[in-house]
Image (spheres, rainbow, N blue to C red):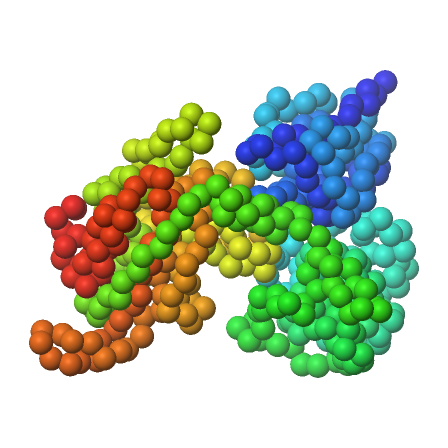
Length: 490
């Protein structure tokens, strides 16, 4: 006789107490294997898939998509020890024994009755949806009348798969498939009462992107009819427009519209809420100060060009700036610290876990490069690239977003020269780098056009005085102007 076990939302680590259900990966009646992901949740740190430690048949799910659950709340119940009636391989009984903290357990066994294909996370073409039981197309999002057709679109059960993007048998507005992959896009449309079947996607094969939904919501707020879903030629992947950073007029996920006043209210929750709380706490607790200096980056740019011309993996400018940061922190370790307010002590670290600010569609995130002081420029380049891509696709783990000791903020990518950033609490300092542009500069006693950058350092005045902060910033500027200065520390 089968035993019904209850699987609860596990502790996801880093002090997180709740998570929002983004997408269910299983339906009631599905057979799951041990450590198979069953739900995708979004925490204040990242979006993660939660694996179930039991193998068996799903008998119940708790919570709809968009619902926030506290840690310890029931997620699903699984009937363990009952062999499937179809005679398929048993998925095992009992639990995996793995600790469900962070972003999941070990990979699920290869033997499983139900195969779930990974969905693309960016502008790639829609892939095939999850296969149903016994190889048939199964329910999608709890709808029994919808099935997954090749290409990831939904078609009504009993009929042929309907193509999109003007191909044979394409459906018009209001009927047929909805070419959308991202659960965030679906949630954004659902929370604002927007029918995705009325939209024309700007992605490949008519894929509906977040930018399409945001445009339609802005148009609706201005009383303009949203664009109809007319067929259009496929957009090459390289030409797919990326969702822009939301402006004050853009409806963010979870926003509610007030028709009479024209107000848009966006709940501060998830990553946006966590960032808001952290920035507010930084301003409340840290007496920060900022100093800045202009530097001639011409020689640094030449050094990077020479490195990349020598062959091997390309070295990024961010990696060179990070290498300069770690060398400067070795000379001025006061800035690689934090303040223990309760003990009234400054805690200095002997390692550099370097955070870097990255703007993504889900908001500002600060991934952390572990032991940056022990990495060379090539290793730093590779790690920056890996973490940046994970940030864009929403796959950063809680462990990759916490534990930083110093932050590097390259706001020059936004086309600005300077900034006074808010320190990433509980760190003690942040180095800001503006854009590098040609400017008139006195070089070797003569006026010349040089590549100039503005560097700024925001620091916690409790950990050091202006002399240390100025010394750190001056050393960084010297390395930017004369990269050979770094050779003394290599």
